Length: 441
Image 1 (tube, rainbow, N blue to C red):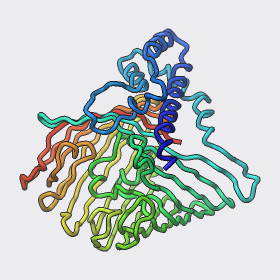
Image 2 (image 1 turned 180 degrees about the horizontal axis):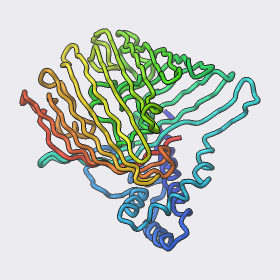
Image 3 (image 1 turned 180 degrees about the vertical axis):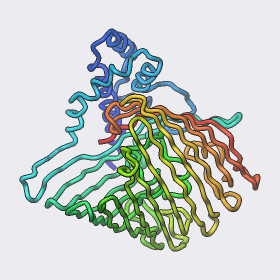
Image 4 (image 1 turned 90 degrees about the vertical axis):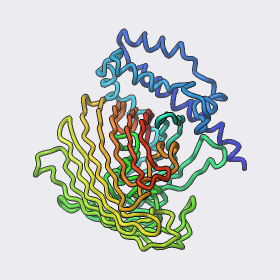
């Protein structure tokens, strides 16, 4: 097919665009002695031509080579952290109109006077990372385009939003197109009520209700990996809104056999109920949101959009005040078929050292009633095929925000331990390091 043949060229040009514009945005803002140093460093690192970018930057998973090419953005972060570039050098640039002007390119049309079409916006995200994980004498490492999504958002008739977005895999020619994520129409006249129909996110647990664009850690916790539905986007209908300090979300989604579009509708349904209460005024904090989620799905062997969980309950809390904050989650789920009952906790304190530099820690605990009820996280499972019954994780991370969540660098070290009482291949005790670029619009 012609679009598959054109995919590598598109990816090369897109990657070149991203890295070159990041480079120019970062360097052009400096007016200090560090400017000459940074320019000299970048000048000594010849940029690969577009024809070689897909081979060097977008390496396939597990190809065995290590660290042949490091993103220049990660070099800059290293310079920041060792003090060669003071954080305030970039803060002025982050507040300038440079980023605003660049991100306005995503606004294709804006006209409040037009009664039919008010806005046309392009939407998407590009997330690129390097990960290495080690357990005793076994190591796995890879460069990975974690997410690449492109789409459109239209605002119509002053009350409707039409959003379509698809996910692509630029590391492979086939399949280059992975799936549709968002295809929905939303109606809303005011904050108390919004009705959404189509394929959209089913949000519950702390990390599961946080967009991957706005995560404080480089990836979601293993609690979300086990008790949330990682497919995230499912066809359904939902209502949501805010009334005074209360917020709500209720929806019904197809849990049936999944495919790259809307699924087969041959399984059962999942029903989500969420209630939030805003405690910020009571606690005198910038943000204080207490939330409760309950999910029910009728057990069905064809439910592959979801995990094999019949009842799921999550109580979560997010608090931020000034420079510090914390997020927490306590969740439990009852399984069906081969999935054991589960429960777990997650706590994530963070410190905003400056407006750009943030430190994050996280502890995650998971336990299953029966053996082999807990899965390992994304990169850990590349080393261990089995599952266990008790999981502990400590995460330590540092983030640098160039333009809020729209452009940031994230780095994290995970110390993970899995107990496998069945002793059938699920024991794990290792360390994972992940470093990546996150960009969204």
